[in-house]
Image (tube, rainbow, N blue to C red):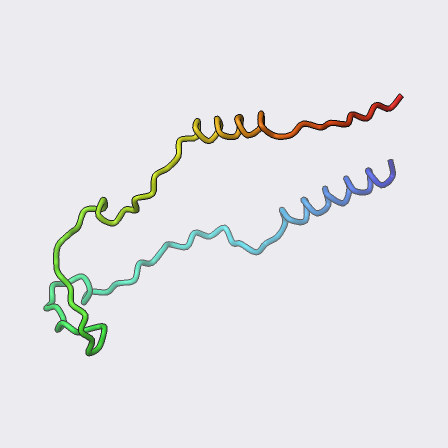
Length: 102
């Protein structure tokens, strides 16, 4: 009983101490958004540069549909998996010896 009372007092004291912490001030601080006028105005684009160096890499522009990138993996339905487990459970060996404590 004493340890429970001591623990309760300790928790209440820590909660009270946590509420009196003066770390944060209650004065509002407006948020300043940085101003970058060069990025917001219209200007010419930079010259094209090759990121791969001098390689024989070639590319074509355009979009390919997602079905061309998909795998041909066939998912087995969950019902078929459950039926296979049930059939395996019927085939499994049962215990031959039964122990009874009298």
